[in-house]
Length: 152
Image 1 (spheres, rainbow, N blue to C red):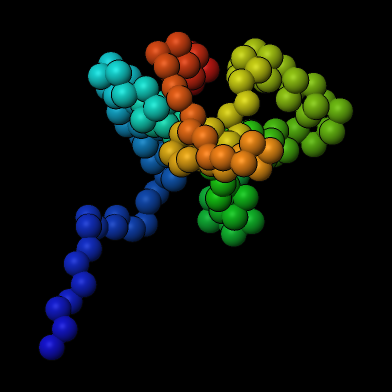
Image 2: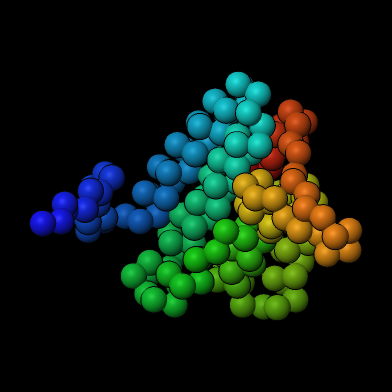
């Protein structure tokens, strides 16, 4: 006789406001990020701040569109913050030239020219550099954590 599988937690079905749930998760990730940074766990703290940023963008998207639509659910299945922001701009602005102007302003004034796209994975895993023929890992310091928190 096999032992039944064990599960962690329980699912809460039929959420009424997915955007609000993402906002709640955003706040929780931000709190955890700040806590870890306060304990000098910068890499892990920044990871949670980036998670908060991703969830904040998802919350904004789902506040504008029907979150039950498969197309929108599929489009947000990324951890690339740059891609999520591009999708948000696509939703908000149909004019391609204006969308590019918004991208440039976001890049300069919101993101501070920080490239967030691959940060989600770079914070968690060693990566192989083909040019150097070796693995590397991203080191994160307090000033990096402060920069990411300011962008959040």
